Length: 184
Image 1 (spheres, helix red, strand yellow):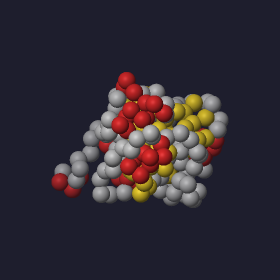
Image 2 (cartoon, one colour):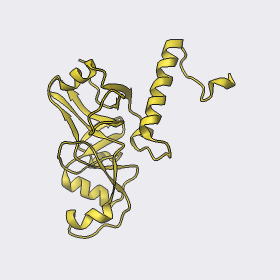
Image 3 (cartoon, one colour):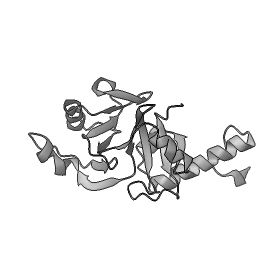
């Protein structure tokens, strides 16, 4: 089994589960025991400022949006680049933390780039693999640009286009496609 840790799961149009329609999920863990990830493109209107009174002893002023990482209730977590406040590495130089004290420190420091996530997406042994069998997901290696996406375009559209370009370049045997192939 090839682990998808550090990859993006991109929901195909065939995936009709309302929890995952047009989602882009960063895989944090994937092994024979199961898989765990966080949806990247489900921001909420809630900010750290809104939540800090409920979570911390003192208020924290930060307009950082909270994302819903999936349908499974879980701890507040943060994706970030501060190794000394990390629980696990996701990609080289990119980490996630679920330890409450570490997340609190990251929030108080207003670490950027970062992604604050409540809940997660989880799969039991073999469950994710069976979803691939019915063509529910596509994969693409994750990049920090995608993980911390702040562009005007929808992240799902962006990664689908990136996946299409990657497949085309592999098919053509080209290492890198120009941004606008018509200029060639």
